[in-house]
Image (tube, rainbow, N blue to C red):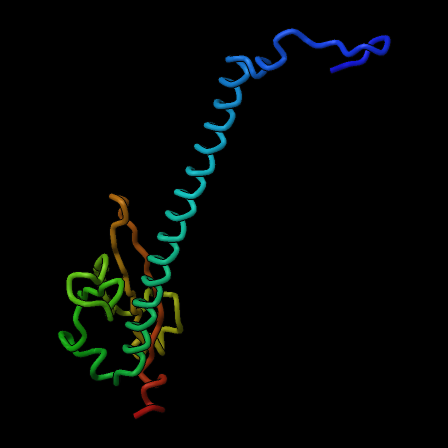
Length: 160
């Protein structure tokens, strides 16, 4: 109420005052867009975290395989058939069977070093090891590989 010349003046239909339908529709559109963007951000964040975890697990698998190879003797490394060419590793090896998550398929290739990469007089004492890991996330094929050289007189001679 407002006072005009000492008398209160009432606005007609003051109890019915509120937002118009257009204002409500615009507000709901803004709220809907904001909620949609927020949910899309959450979904994108969860997917990114999943991809990062899977990538980290692939890196752990490759490192595990490479460290195992570095401890083999030169005869074991050069003996064909001693080190399997293919392997399968679960995402979570400690989980119960059937709940281990996706399966990583890996290959290990041991070849002579490429010409020109090392001194030719020492090339017969070195091998190139390539560990490759493949997996699929949401119908997206993913792959990572790790390359390293091992030598006849490397770490394995100090361990054993």
